[in-house]
Image 1 (cartoon, one colour):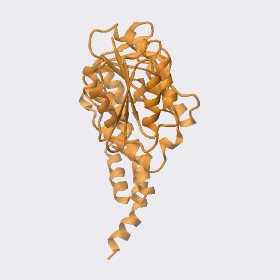
Image 2 (tube, helix red, strand yellow):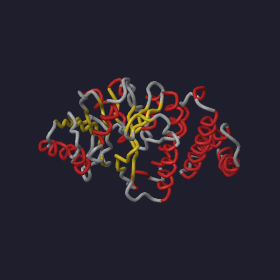
Image 3 (tube, helix red, strand yellow):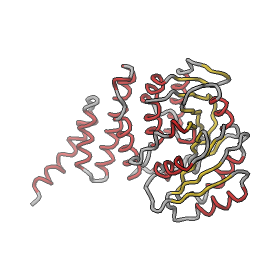
Image 4 (tube, one colour):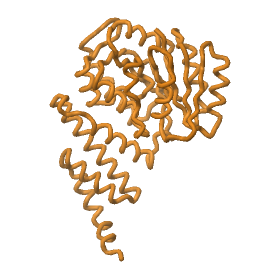
Length: 318
């Protein structure tokens, strides 16, 4: 059983080496590491190549000819180049526990069909909003320990796994995922700049079961600048709406359909607010109206009222 580690990078020169060091520290070494760079203007590729010359396994650095605007295309390039039986994804600033690959390969030996393999994620000092996300995710996963395999590994059959990922983006980061090539073939959605792990698990769990390792094997790196509250937040909400809208509601439980509707309403309202803040009043109106398809709210009606002066000004303009 061989594993290729795939790392999409962009402007990662300052922290990539620390991430790569956690790959070298694995108790089960990978077959190879592929660093797929999204045309970084800094020294990311040089850092990766220098580190690779000291590594105890092969390290390949693939640099895209032009920036694609997100990690999805670099990951797809790396998937096409990978030689391992399994592919493990690692964000350029996240870190792995030394037993991450060993534990997930142990889980892979317990099943006899292609699966998505995932694990818990932790963050050293998350701000309060993220602390609430981690607590809610932990509570959510604790309710799904219904099909134990062995020693902290749990199976979620395909239908249950799809229902679960529609209810909550419980993987939080690509760094928690390992998949065989048959699952990796679904690919990452290159129309998404953010939320790519949710888009990937949505597509994969529509076809394959999930095996969950109930251990925090990934340290998620919180960088405030990577979670911008302006144009970046607007893009994140746009991508979240795109992913949530693609779930096939016919395959979901009534409770999850309600939860999905609530998530969509919240994301639409957030997108409307951010659009209005940026002076994109047409986009804001469309998002407020879209939120009403998922439930009435005072926030939507209030936002529409606040847009009326802008609509009247535009109508009265020569």
